[in-house]
Structure formats: C-alpha cells, structure tokens
Length: 163
Image 1: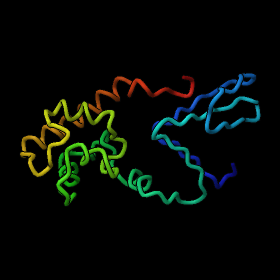
Image 2: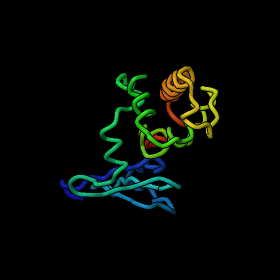
Image 3: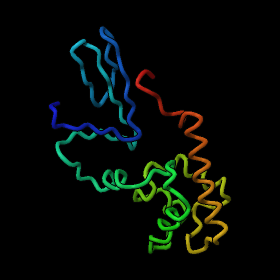
Image 4: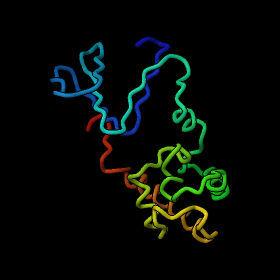
C-alpha cells in the first residue's frame, strides 16, 4: 500500500492480529505483513468485504453509509426515522424497509429480527399498514435494541483484532 491507498473492511470480515513468528492461518483472503514480521489476516464470510482503492470509493452503499446518520447517534431521532419511512415510495415490507438499500446503515438481518419482534411487527407487514403507534413502537424498538446490543459489546459473532 502507499499513502494514497485506502483499505475499507466491511461487516462480515474477520480481522486478526498475529504477533511476530506466528504461523499464518490456513485460509485467508488477505494477509498484510508489517516490518516487525507481525501481520493481520482477513477472512471474509458470506457478505463480508475488503476494498482497496485510491481516491473516493465510488460504491453506492458505501457513500450512503458515510453520508447517513448512525441509528446510535442522537440525530437519528423519530423525525429522521419517519422521513426514511415516508421517503420510500414503494410499499415495502417492514423487513425490506429497514434492512435493504442502506436506508439505515449497519442495520442488517441479524438485528432486524430482534427489532421487529420487540416492536411486535411481522417482517412481511407492509409499511402502508403501519399505524402511527406502530411506527413509534418500531422507532423505539430500533433505538433500544441497537443501544442494548452496543452496551453489551455488539453481536457475539464479532471479535476484535486479538480474537
């Protein structure tokens, strides 16, 4: 890599640090070795991504995620959520509305089921059928579920650099 290259790691990619003199894993998609002979290995599972690029990364979903408000941010309030819901012209299911097209970056199928269950909304229910009360419950469930997951350290499938 040079100073103009950016490496972006997507969710679903396992990144591990290995100290000097460690043996490389049997399988990996990318291995970066440092001057001291330590290295990091990258393993991609299902939907994981490793992007290396120069300049602006011209991927629709990456750009949307950078320009959006995180659902954990205070700016992701009920008015912002309602703008997302009502900004979609198609009558999508609750699942499609929340977990596709990066409308809410980082929100995927894994946490979606918990959010919908906690809100009492069936994943196939169409957004046109949501009452104002259900939309409020959905927003509250989204914020509380993601907040609780974050407070507890995230998903149990995610690990830090040291495993």
